[in-house]
View 1 (cartoon, helix red, strand yellow):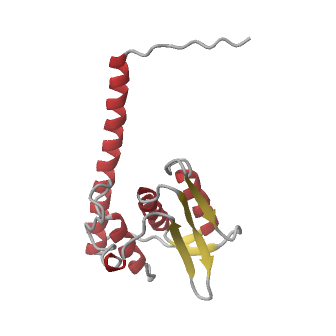
View 2 (view 1 turned 180 degrees about the horizontal axis):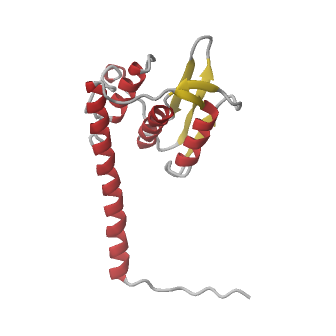
View 3 (view 1 turned 60 degrees about the vertical axis):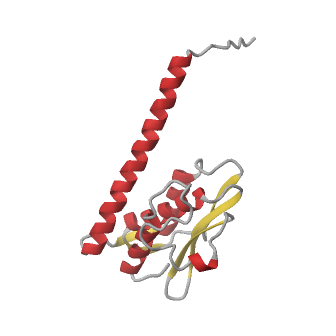
Length: 178
């Protein structure tokens, strides 16, 4: 026989827990802003380190899935769409992770239902990493500026407008495109 007991939570404690959650969230946002600004400055100064080493794209995508799988809004599914085999490339693992993280985070901000799909495909001479979503989309006239610094297409959504510009700078530095 199982006994379920309801416990009344003191409103003062409830309020303190809410304040603590807000404090942690705001601290994370501030830390991300600082890191984005530092990365942007390092990229522009040519001092951001890119350490190329053998890395497995499948492992990267699996790691990204584990990091982000419980973060989308209710009604949104995160889908890892990869060939499923080990695929070794020589690139900077941290920067590839940063690209996926920034793009997935951006997709989560603008997708309220459907899915966020990410992964990679293998082409003749290059690998094609992608993040796609069923979110609100970007108007054609705004698509050219979305990768510019401090561009926010919706001022009511959290963010600084740096994540996508950092993605562009990283992919350009790696010899790719976005």
